[in-house]
Image 1 (cartoon, rainbow, N blue to C red):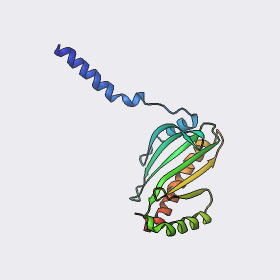
Image 2: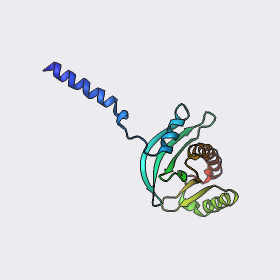
Image 3: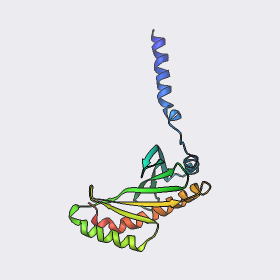
Image 4: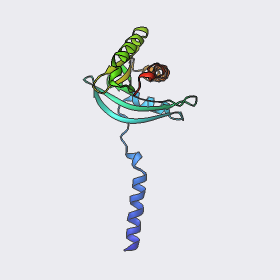
Length: 171
């Protein structure tokens, strides 16, 4: 009886250790290629969330955490790969959370930043007093991974700089 219990316990432990092997793989080819390209980068961590509805379309979401060796700031955002392989969305929410009493100042700062930039846009959400950032990329099937990687670098650099500008409003 003890031997059977020991074998069952060992089998249960082995199965518990191998759970990641049973995790759902990326469904879209571009997501798979992107995740494969990220392997080996020590400063980028990725987590496949799965297929979600975003703006009425199916996107496969990957959560990204980036930690630079030259900064204490940690960037956390999502990359969404469209099912039709025609666009990729990078989204950071929140970039900052702010005190409600500073809404006018935050709106002014965000409007000024948006007027000076193209591509990446900032949004103020008054329901939770946050500022988020979004980069929408038009891609082809063959360019999606490369442009997503370039967008990742752009997003990190841009949001780091914008965080510095908006940090005085952060709660």
